[in-house]
Structure formats: structure tokens, C-alpha cells
Image (cartoon, rainbow, N blue to C red; front, side, top):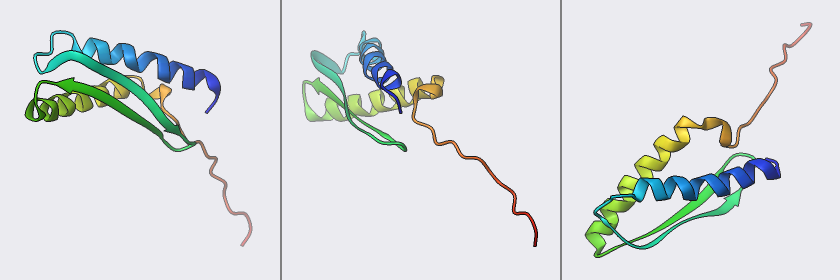
Length: 93
């Protein structure tokens, strides 16, 4: 993956997270961050940190945000790492 998609990934996800948390009653407004921890040819490892008033609310908030982030990523799959290959036929025999 080149530097441009990495920059897009790092830049767009925090904006998406902010939109996901707007008006969210479970979030206490103190902490919300998207951190790209690792990137390989096959995967991007992202950590999302959030805060809530208690552990039950935090669990529910994490679940909601995870589902919303997956939906967001599915809307823009071209920004995710892809693996391309070319199929070749076996000649002869």
C-alpha cells in the first residue's frame, strides 16, 4: 500500500468517528481516537479508543462504534488494502 492510501486512511477515520459519536448518549465526550497500529499487504490494524461513564456503557459504546465503523468501511472498500493476482492457465499436458 502506498503512502497516499495510508494518509487517506489515517485522515478519514477520525472524522468518521466524530460523526458516529455526535449525539451518542453512551459517550461521555472525553476520549475518542483512531490509531493505525499496523499495516501490511493484507490488513490494517486499527485501534479505536473511547470513554464512557462506566464499564457497561463503554462495552455498549464499543460495540456500536465497531458496527458503525465496519459499515463505514464497507461504503468505501477501495480505501482498504487489497490483494491482486492474475490467474494463469496451465498449457500442455
